[in-house]
Image (cartoon, rainbow, N blue to C red; front, side, top):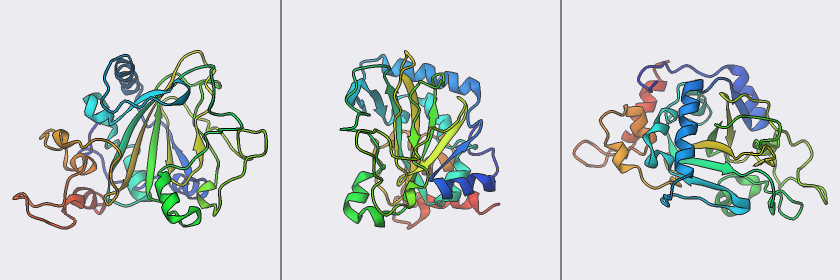
Length: 277
């Protein structure tokens, strides 16, 4: 399904209320099972490859890629997902584009140097904003849409959240010897659900004891005046098969067809779509 065939319907009010209250919300059945299976096959193929473009290997054996859309077109159906994009636009504005498409493979079992009392892993996204503006003055600037592609179990290491932490004016405190702040939770989700959370919401990867990697795909959308984290998608922007909304999300510039400057033109597709409600 593409952005050309679904109406600009505002999300269910309960979704918005939960997001404003907790800093995250769950979108049920955001993926068709067949698409989820296809995405998992594509992700596993990438992870088994020797590709280094956008490779993101982290502590404790984490593996993954940034800029997945540059690496395989199988991920494109998530870009303007009709079950998640309306919530993103409603909570931010139509003046958004994709900042990152991040594939994350969290290994199972030890060794573990993250998620220990000395290094709990809890954080905000876009850490540079908090560093520059201060914890209490950081605004909502971006929203991540997290999809989990491998089977979900109680021990697979799903992302944990601290509800309401997006409204805090100082960093949450974690008791001595603990790895989680009081009130931290793991959302109750199914494999076809998506979790939306904003840049200020404190979160961390869980501890994976499932016996297999936990593979997630997280798409982050933010205002068009923010610099994307991924490599440019110039080759995709020029694909005539993409809809105007998809082109905007991939970084359509403020230009007229002749290349001259046209302030705001790059956001016309989503504004036109959204204002048609």
